[in-house]
Length: 172
Image 1: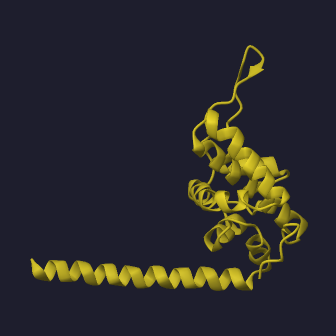
Image 2: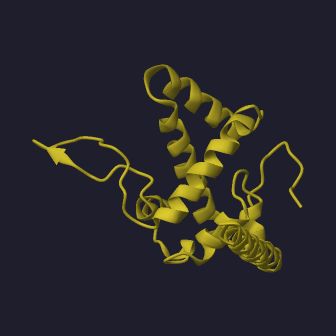
């Protein structure tokens, strides 16, 4: 029994080392890649998201419009209409599930600090929280912010420019 536990611990330690090596490789790649450095200027987009948005199923810039990228990731409700009237249902589950999950997790972490900034994005995020929180579940605001981050990422990749938050110094 003790040898089995020791073997399991050795396997876990090996997996931890491999995961650390992958993380180091992700971070190295994002520092060397120009598009990844541009995506790093967006608040709430971490190294893994930079890799995913830039090298996902399709490159983010390949979508014709930013709304197509958000729809491709499943961050907007699928279109549905009855009697000629559109209805908004829940968020779709199509697209790159892993990248959608990462964007939502990063949005969850970045939304409160960004909402506290006196910048255009911060004021938008603060208004979003005020609109969504009393009437709906707080996750609605988080997914909406993830949608906003995906659209900003599309614009950054498409234009080839960094995201500049007016009123704040540029991120390194």
